[in-house]
Length: 121
Image (cartoon, rainbow, N blue to C red; front, side, top):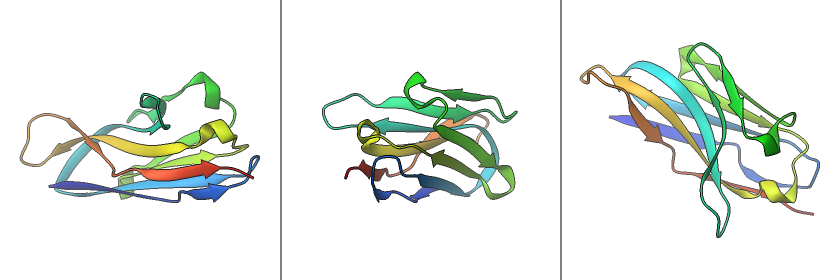
């Protein structure tokens, strides 16, 4: 079994910063890509940022220059540093990690439970 636990969300004023963290635990053999997606009310979930096992990153255009994704392979953790936050960044943020367990021969996407980020004055 694999579990992803997110932390770091909350309420912040426009221009502020938040740091989201997601830690995976369980019967983990290897982790491929990691990422963060978000879903605002009435909108589809969108991929915000991702990072491969080799450290190659992707960012959706709306967060480039403001958000930074990183990973700690020893701790099975992915972090999203969010700076210069805007009201339009308000959403539930979900982490995902592409994980292979010891008793599986393939990688599977696991998701966190979601964490609220609200940007408002």
